[in-house]
Image 1: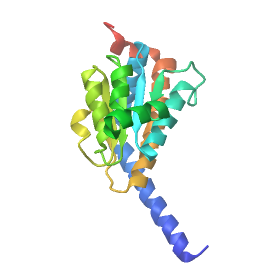
Image 2 (image 1 turned 30 degrees about the horizontal axis):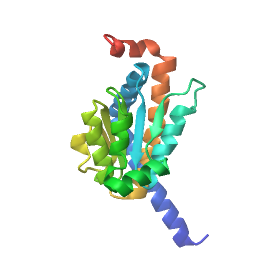
Image 3 (image 1 turned 90 degrees about the vertical axis):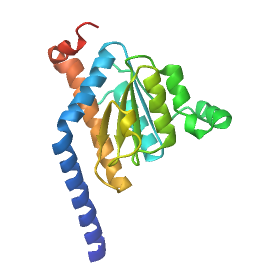
Length: 204
């Protein structure tokens, strides 16, 4: 291995570790709030809808799979859908209405009051993700955003998890770590510490 390669690896990993540590030290309470919101929705019979483009589409599918199958805890499947996977739906909507509507129309079809819609966009400005969150608000869903430092996504979100960086790859690495923690904390609330969740379910 050359010295240049070693320097590239060291610089990248040091920046990634520092960003991850900074995000979670500053946003642990917010991550917990998002996970509890998901747990309350699921406990009330709701579901979680994920959407994003490119690497964020892969994250949407990854996280939906963790909820539907399992994360680390052996427990019943939880209802979650990635809006990025059905090529017939995506191409039909894209052909008839344009790419900006591919997620919004699915939210209109599937979203119910109390569901959680998670839009993932490293820029915070993906038009189809923004349209999905607008549709989610119209349907009475809770809106959650995973984004970079800022963007048009923020005012459309009830809860926004913003990674303070400009580098797409590093933002995406933190996004998937956030997603794994959301799975872990949601499972904890639903199956390991149910009494802690009970006050949030009163009056349901």
